[in-house]
Length: 216
Figure 1 (cartoon, helix red, strand yellow):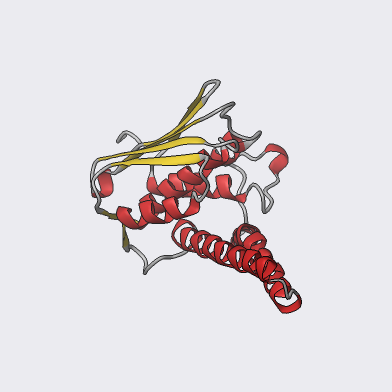
Figure 2 (cartoon, rainbow, N blue to C red):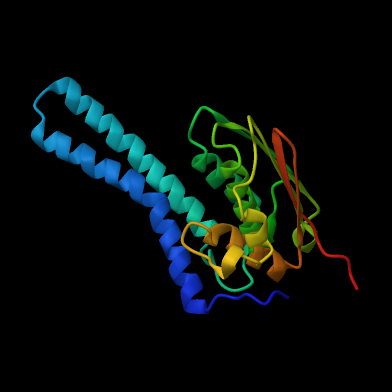
């Protein structure tokens, strides 16, 4: 166990802050588009504004659906989540042409926290390739034995500074904010599942492997 721990209220507040950060940009774009529709008379500009609204609404919806599974309760205590739903919301999150997703593994109902861990690993992998690339998810085992390997491959792929320490529950300077809460939360879920995360990286590849801790 690590010495650092967030109070429950602080953890909830920072998680809410992270979700708001993820959706504020597309929601702001929707507002901007609506303002253009109200003021603009040119049909071409109105068409551009309408297209912006549609794309931004789709982005906001995709991010909220992802956050619901990755951060939220998504069912009662002990509930299982369909890994097919996890794949769907991850594909929705990756909505640009620069990043591709390969998902390997049979669709199944898996323990809620294991699926939440998987989604948070995907989020870390996506952030490791800001210029785009390939995210590959490999699932093995079933139910309580489910394990995950998530790989990000792309130009200058790397984790942001401090991410490994946050996953380990040892934030630099003992500080966790709205930006860094996601990798810290990932570590919390991993420990709750009894699934240590192994991280390896090279010039163009970052791999996150979550597997069950060996029985003592």
